[in-house]
Image (cartoon, rainbow, N blue to C red; front, side, top):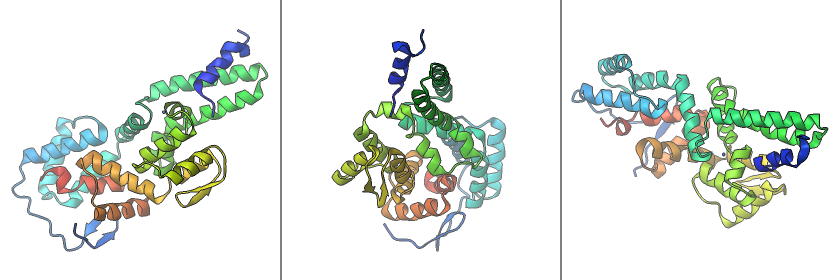
Length: 298
């Protein structure tokens, strides 16, 4: 893989000539626990509901709710006696906003790419585009194609939140975009560091000794098995780690720690992993956490 420093170096040398108790669960649109009787909410104050609504906006959009929306949502939830269905409706509206996808991009970037934003990404893309043009002009087609390939991955990363919002890419492809780029390569230099970082970022654990050997060699282009799949390239490795069962477990861990400040129990891990894996819908996972009394503080 080619680094930005090598690319810039091409200019410098004259090419231009000038990153608990087990429950029975049915999975439909929402995660429903059979035999679970909702508690009465008559004692929940308007202030508590307002805190919940504002918390949803801060966590999902990164902004406080407007006074108008706060009054509307609070009144609606109170009228519906804080039912799960009414909470889902409010959460659905928030999740449909463009700011949610922008917030999701920012959170993933902060965790995996040291917080690079889309404006900085565009500067990188502009630089790569310029270098590509100069390489083609100088007749260096091979290096031009290498830089162009890396630039295409940066463009895919920059567009990932919009493409995900439109349903043009899956949650797997969204997450993969954050490791399949030269910025992530430079933060985690070398095949070994890259492979370990992917395990930690996606699976929330370190690789075993055998996984370390096989994963590193796969990234280097050798045919190896890992996570019950075979591959022989860096692209194969990224695809495997963002589609395996543990990837979905990682999504559950990520969202539980983000919204509930704790890890899921064994039963929760099983139930919610099945939910997100079956639906392949990150928003459905979030909704089933955010509509709980534990998150709401009721």
